[in-house]
Image (cartoon, rainbow, N blue to C red):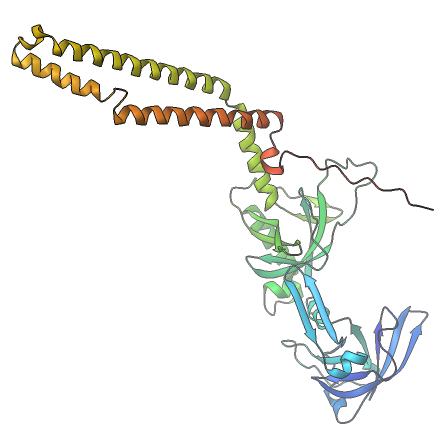
Length: 390
């Protein structure tokens, strides 16, 4: 059997490259050419008998790479092919699980599309979808096309374009959110749902928007910084107002991740900066001084009572009064300079005074630069380009 594969680029296959089915070589690439009218590369394959019966109407062909290394929001993915494919490459074909094998091919059905990899084949399965635009206020660095759109860990769609377009000269660049084109794929959400259900599915999503369904940016890989879009319900968000962007319905979003943490820290610093810290420190210093005076007065009273008890006239007063004076003496001794309570209070006051002294530079720094708690005190200047040498 001879059949033709089409691809948008030439040089993907060479004459003699193997045609592989489940690891076995079942054919070869016979010729390569380029169609000027369609501007697509053509690759003619020859499938040996009896393997030609494996080619069905729902068969897909994709390039075989000796080493397939992918780096995305899910991390690293490495796959190794056969020894021959490691050296020469080739093309693999098979049917996609869940779609069936299809019917036998006829003479007028011997043209197939050549996919770049099996992942592109799987993504091509979801040909029923609804496109939305998500508007993000925070940075989208790390969000790439083909990144997943998930709902609580389950993939429901794909990022198509980041950004969808740049602002026009008439638009205010600083005030605009960044538009990201995404698509919600019907086959990932429901099983065996016909395309006729797309309008109803779209209206269902709008009902979910009103209940708090929002999209947020999340980090998929800390090593690479790759981002993906997560969707979930946030009932406390502002009410949903339907809107459009470039004829696309807008999927509502909310800030998430580091942007939300940064906003909370800035709010905290603003509240801290508005507190009357200087007045509080002055009041605390006055309290410390008054406490020292109180301790000094208690010491003087204790000494006076001690002298009073040692006088001969005091010893002659009734026993009850003398007993009360002795009890007062014991109580006042607890506040004397040699008592444990006095030492503990003096130590506590000194520590509190030291803390207040050390806290003053921090308050001064926050008053001068509130965001230094997050980004540090030192500023790093942008690198200056060096003029090239001729």
